[in-house]
Figure 1 (cartoon, rainbow, N blue to C red):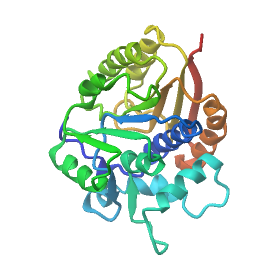
Figure 2: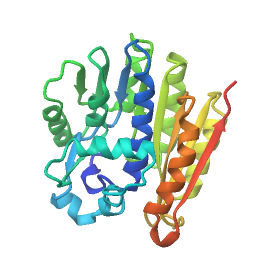
Figure 3: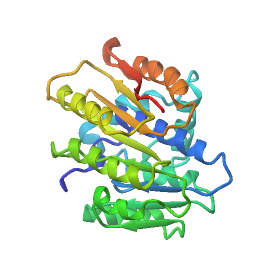
Figure 4: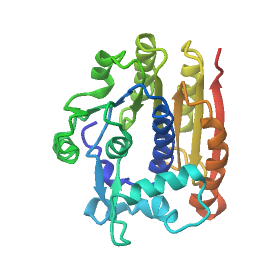
Length: 281
């Protein structure tokens, strides 16, 4: 679990989808005057150098964010994501990729809060440095999937929980559903965004069925693939499962995902899913 380093994958197609959805949720929460709280259970270091040895070893950003830079046909949601990423780069160079913590921080208002969890020692020190002692932000070196439960419900009674584990352990697929059921019992009106990879499709089918049986309602699924499934030999698709999503998110994704599948797909093999996994009561 502690061997995973997101720097190898920063800015790839999975990050594009995850961060487009994340930004849409945050913008929606900020439409109301009342404050909100965001919990990021697997924060990582916060930002990543795309010219580092980690990033250059895989160069996954080249089939992700890099394909969107300079395009003049971006859907609004994708354009907002790209412009936010550009804030961390200057002089026309794009060498830094902002992870979820820094993106969230950029969209917080003075009255909002961010709670970050990271268990990897090196990543945690980097995360603290990137947060620069912001009074709105709390960083904790702990297992976010376990420790974030104690923060619910937040005092604001409004907010988002972002869950983004590495899934290095097969048990993660079951653990995230068990945790979300507990979280939802404590904070039923909160929004929850769960990222998942598609490596072996059977695991994802089990994950989706677990949600359908969980008793949780108002669940939507957004999935982006850049190549056909390949039976455990790498990630060619990933997705977001969102509980209590913004009312307009699914319509926006019906525009965003076909575009991303076309632009990021390999040799015309891009694919997508936009589904209501469990309907709202």
